[in-house]
Image (cartoon, rainbow, N blue to C red; front, side, top):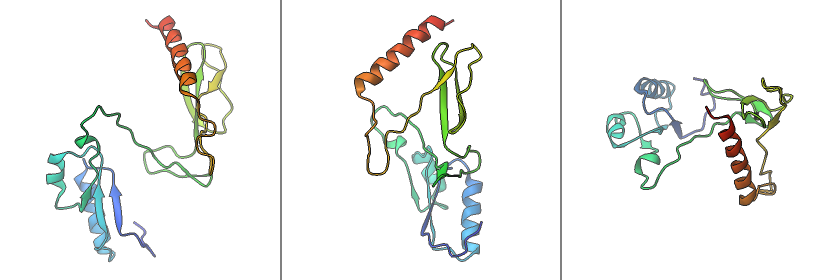
Length: 164
């Protein structure tokens, strides 16, 4: 853990299920003179895990556990900064593109600047991700709801044709 000239006051660990990692981070911070740095924990936290983690954590992220509505649980990861691929361990770094076959709906994830692949069924695959925001131009290229609906319905009809 390299902390030279480190000015942070908090760290966030998205790993509520791994007490060993929490203990190691606290140890390393204390050992290097950063005992003032607070540790916040998130990642599937509920009231039982909070009680268990209290000796190690200064705060918690508990969004899903306290929701009163149906939840779509997802996370986002930084994989590129200023065009340079970066990622935490276990994540694929760099910008990516998903290509999908318009015939059989097979899809593949590739680095952003890759050439569109050929689907095993013989059809050329098309990119399905597009940028909808740019600095100063948020939402400029966003699709209208009706267009998104039509696109999804077209895909569902195709899926019905190839279902087992």
